[in-house]
Image (cartoon, rainbow, N blue to C red; front, top):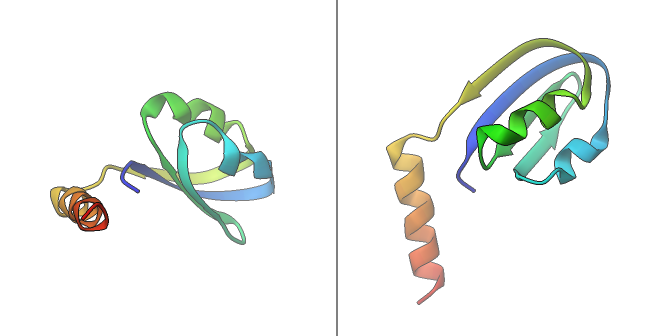
Length: 79
């Protein structure tokens, strides 16, 4: 799924509901790390509030190749 990817390193607890927030397209929680894909930046604040202590955060946008590949997958699936 295409969206902005937030990579978060954290200590302490994380509210597991982060993965079910409106606007969250994909969510992978690991030991002290999380990768959350969001639909738009309006979802960023609720996502951040789910972590008790963030030690590092990085947000990236999909590049043109990712967008094209996702679009092409959708076209193939609809045929």
